[in-house]
Length: 170
Image 1: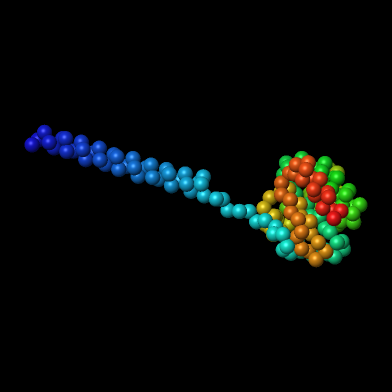
Image 2: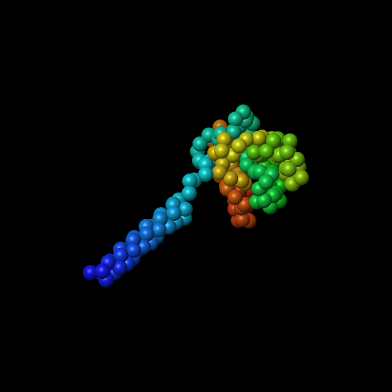
């Protein structure tokens, strides 16, 4: 009988260890699912057909308005500066009002745009979330009623840049 006790104790320890391993494995799987498989929360995005949330803009001053939501700290914005120079030139030719919106103070934003050679009609400060923009760069084409007609998010490939420029003449 005394020989069975160590054997029984060893079996109980082995069973407890197996249960602990299973619990640990389940915990690891749950952490993995939570961190890697759950869809992340979507950043706010400008909805086509909605009123653009930038306040105190005279949208009627032009039939089309181009909003450039950029940031001085966004390397994609800086990389896109040659396209933005071309875009604002096309906007001027087509009488499209251009507004740059940055989260930084207006003076800092103006200095950044000047340094990049991007000359817009207006520079505004706003948080990105206040204008329903999830990230920079984002371009928003707004009509004379303040309604969003087109949205482009991120650094655009050449084909998209041509599409954006073409939208200005339509």
